[in-house]
Length: 389
Image (cartoon, rainbow, N blue to C red; front, side):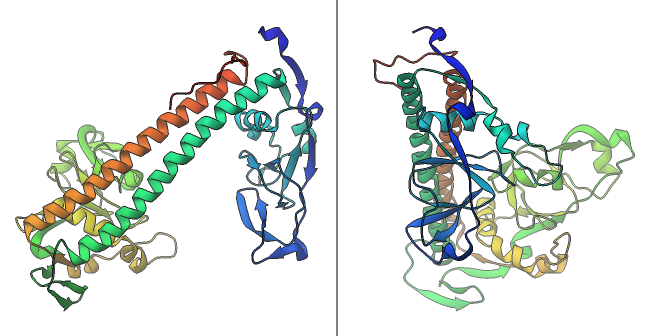
């Protein structure tokens, strides 16, 4: 086939765009008809507004995330329903998904998508057989994405259950005792965290001193909280210098130190892969012989909701230093701590492996959409597609 077989038209020649409608009395607690807002299902309706299949595109708010709908449904008035008899609907969905609809936004506040602007989108149109083939290929990739996402979600659920079991009941215990933590194994201890780990706070070297910054010492600040909750933290936004450390209350902490945020996004934690320093917004623990740093990391992860609950402040949440002075920890024998950590680390390894796989498949899909929907790469409509995911 030649690219000359493709035509160019506008979206109006390919589909009808219908306005959604406010649900009013149609909204019910549950039914077979989902009620769609611009971000997805928001409830249920007692009857359908549109018959499937269709494409939903946001009219107000979220305008750049089309949804392919395969069941009769109700779409609210902040979205459009797209229908076609002149093209393969799934191919059209992928084309619209690949198109940057935010370019059509003319609003200064809430993003808004005008129907006439949507109708006037220019579309390169392959023959119908090629449309279907493109849609089949991209659907295969989407199925691989969904399968991988389901594996990640399931593994995270298993890990959550393991954390609850291992960090409260341990491994293979038959005798338990009642403590401040509830029922724990009889041979576990309970003590202040400060008794088994050296607590260190952070500090910010003078920002006005240029010789204190752009050095080679990683310095964890609130800019880096997105890097926490991923086991190791190994890079930071800002780097300080030896002068910055020596002329401030900042401390160069050893590799393996456990860090936890006490301000803003409280309760996020990680383990320093290298010697690092932190700002005053973090508490740092250097573990001693009685406490394994990986065990502490998972214990803090398990108790994250506690930290979020006790944080105070209307604008910026914070946890007072006194809380950390009084923070207690259940302490199993060191070898059991290491065994617990090994099990949970293996679960994180599985999750990370699937997240990497997911990223690769998503990159593959993005690349395929760029070349298949523009005709840069043609598909053979006579042969079954082969997509390696």
